[in-house]
Image 1 (cartoon, rainbow, N blue to C red):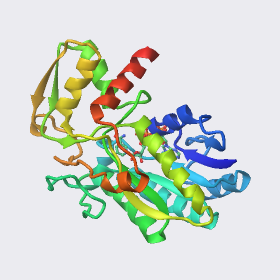
Image 2 (image 1 turned 90 degrees about the horizontal axis):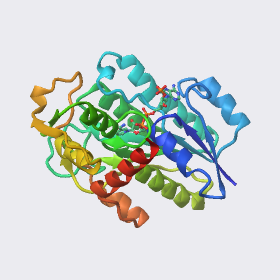
Image 3 (image 1 turned 135 degrees about the vertical axis):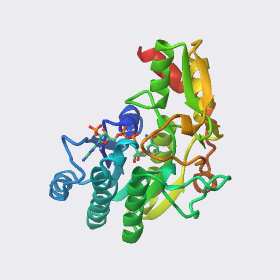
Image 4 (image 1 turned 120 degrees about the vertical axis):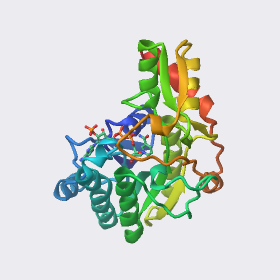
Length: 291
Ligand SMILES: NC(=O)c1ccc[n+]([C@@H]2O[C@H](COP(=O)([O-])OP(=O)(O)OC[C@H]3O[C@@H](n4cnc5c(N)ncnc54)[C@H](OP(=O)(O)O)[C@@H]3O)[C@@H](O)[C@H]2O)c1
């Protein structure tokens, strides 16, 4: 039986693993969030790992409030960088393969073609900088598979899809930014591909790996295109009006373009990746069925 510890398991990604748990019969998941296991507390993690020896650790815990991070940089760095360093060191000591997520917001968006793993990060926001600092820690330790993803949404927690659905039910018109381009990612697809990576590493049980790869759904769009598709799929009549970033002041600066190139992960795992509209349709159905 392969034991997998999931940290930050009450968030979007964590809930996806809860959904998938049980599907694989030789995998036992241990789900924890801050109340059971605070990833900023080295002593607590050490004790937990001693009691619960695991082979994999999927870190879904993060400080993800992009705008709030501008006012709370210490909290963002504590969780997105310092805690990742702690996890990396503990994973090495205990021979645990770490899988960690990062973000398209490590890029400044100046490039106008999909970002590859070798493109140099230039984060614009505190959130992006803190996530990049976490990546650097793991690179220095040479441990952890980092999956950079973008525009993550799911039927759990708060995200763009759920916000647009709520606003669309409350208002006749919504204004949405149309000059930031990226790729939405359904957390269910990302969880499935993470488990595939985990499967790959079962063959190298005594060896810890470091690596960086990009994963999002296929295709690209603006937040405006994304919102229009959400409303269309939900059968709502709300009008979506395109606006520029300058008309929607936010605390954090976001990259105008942050599409990720997925060639590496597709070749490595021999997978195809669902197009964003297909996955969005599935997620909207899931949300509708829950209501
Ligand atoms: N969301 C996106 O659009 C997006 C885009 C690109 C990359 N990513 C990355 O993808 C990963 C997963 O994101 P997500 O959207 O699933 O995150 P999420 O929904 O915000 O979940 C993060 C979880 O971590 C928990 N947490 C907070 N502090 C903790 C601590 N000290 N110890 C343990 N757990 C703690 C949070 O609890 P509380 O809610 O109580 O704080 C929450 O349950 C993150 O690495 C994120 O940076 C996300």
